[in-house]
Image 1 (cartoon, rainbow, N blue to C red):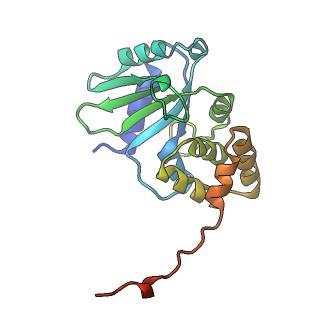
Image 2 (tube, rainbow, N blue to C red):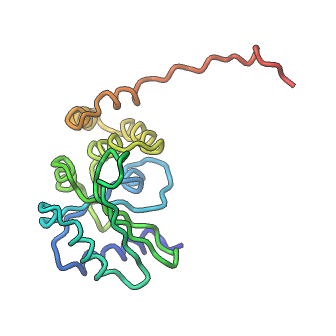
Image 3 (cartoon, one colour):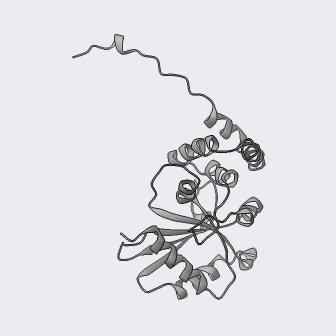
Length: 202
């Protein structure tokens, strides 16, 4: 398996080879790792935006990507409208190495204003060639997702935040309609009752 650095090198080459301006920011599991969350990830996720997506022309970005990919890579476009249970309803472009040596690269097409703000507010992290979304915006992405890892990442992210970052996260959660979910995930869990005595032990 190639290293994260190797995968980032491929991503840089792909983006540089595109004949369109593409704004990108690192999101997802690897962004969480860079913010201090201990976890593993099998892909590298980016939120991307281009002026051509204003006309809902994701197909055009997809076509440009296909033309600029090294031969060993394949791109697949998945339209958000085709996934009924997807809370984001985003178009996503998946880039996979046919030889299985590089991590999968996911390009999530920005759809909402707050996601474009997240890209613009992304910060530079030493050694990482793409800007990384801040903790509050990453928390917003995690709140919109539905996986167990996303919920776990969110809880850990909040523990790593400053008070001002926590306040920004709360405001973002309200804005995207996920403030109740945030409160539920951060609520102290009730301890499981110890009912071992009622069980027959071997």
